[in-house]
Length: 119
Image (cartoon, rainbow, N blue to C red):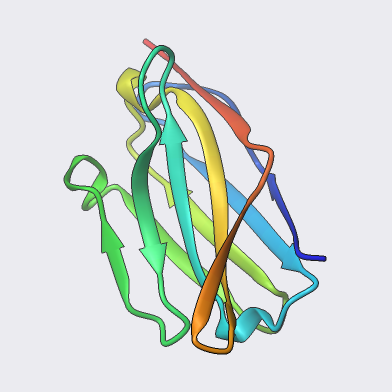
């Protein structure tokens, strides 16, 4: 069974930094595509950043130049470094793992971690 667990959220002031971590056990981590989504209060979940098994990345326009996604396959962990945080970055952040099973990928979600940016 694949388990996805996030950590690293918290309260930070505008302009501050946080690093989120996400581990995905129960799979061959290096073959997973991984991503971070967020859900602000009263809004829909949206993609923040993603990284493929080959290391290609993509970002939401709103976080480009401020957030960096990376992965360490030796630790089965993906990271989201968030710099220059703004109040509008306040949200529950979710990690996802897209796990390949043959020709199909199955998506697994973590429980989410709260990030609050105070003005």
